[in-house]
Image (cartoon, rainbow, N blue to C red; front, side, top):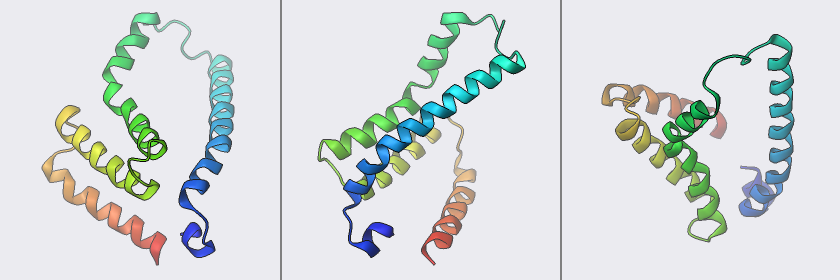
Length: 123
């Protein structure tokens, strides 16, 4: 909405937010690491490297979403607005068909919450 109102390129706004986003996420990772060390969490969970690769393999479909979004935008395949629509469709397909965490009965509630969130932002 800001980009449209201020007549600023949405792509430039997206790129401008990329650096601060990396810095904030890095700071959050450092904070969580320090906090977990302080609380003594994760010292002896026994998974080691095998657990990391198992978790990565299970999350591979979800980890592809940023690649699709950023690759599509930087590759010129779609605009940032179209990227959001592609991300929603991808998340729906992965959630319903691959991870099977979203069922058809859940779809109405998900759509209702999405409409309410969008209405709050738009109006």
